[in-house]
Image (cartoon, rainbow, N blue to C red):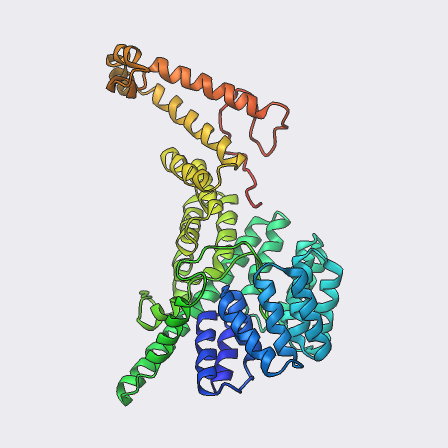
Length: 467
């Protein structure tokens, strides 16, 4: 029962709950290997390298001729970013068990990570032949064609995967949104991403309802066995090299049923939060919730790229408030990501919130100082803010009274030097103009951002931040 529960929760993209079931199964019966592939894949996707290393050693020592043993070794090297060594061990696992679709999918993932598209597609086709009723090999082939810019083939395989999955897999819907976004179909991309987020919200609500039901049964029978599961998960977090609040590594996760996107998975303690009833919504039906409410229901960092892409789609169709909500949710799921701060800053800039945009630009540059886009847009936002305040009569009246003290105190550390007079603003604008003029020299003007000394920001022309 525990192995089936682990496999089911893994298919629902609940990796923390999957890991808790696998740990309970290992504690109850260490020789039961029915959920070994799921256990290994959950550890690799969550980035828990030390427990994965220990598990791989135990499996190799117990049975060195089993495909699962070398699958675990390959997964460890994949989690470490050693894709060449991961290919070697996945190849050995596939040779030991040629009918294992999990080994072939992992083999294809390692090829895709090394940008070897032909070998990756061959591995996915082998997995599809071994398990023709599974939609995941079709999904991988569609994702690989999206990555290599073959939209027609990608659309064919993604639609086939969506149909075979029973129209219930949010990951397939998310990848269809990525395809539409790359084709420039913003409204279709937004629709796909919203549908994926709603499916995730439905799964979150169903898990919450199931947890409430199990708690009521446990209270009525006096059985509190779930506390052991929660304690086991918490102990495992403390023994991992990442611990709590793990940051995104930028490496694609390895799983036996999915190769999703360049992100790592969030904190395992979300399982404990769900068990403690930390998630409350006014409605228990996702269909009755708005899009923003469904976004707020996504508590797993695995779906952060989907929410980020949804925010970019909202921004493309000029729905700035919804886009800002998406980027703020991304920052709550994966704190400290420079790309989320940059996207939030640009969205605020387009909506006219210059102060919020400047603050977010600074946050992004503090984490990625060599970002040319944020550097240029920060200067433009500062320039627009200064030019706007220059024509404010009340502001100019205050500055006129402090102009003499500013000029006399400049460079001497006096308090008057902190007041920026109209003359000081003009000098600052000139310095900004010379900086941007030198920055843009020899660089073609793209995406509606003019070069040279013209700093009027054209909000009708969007800048593609999808990269």
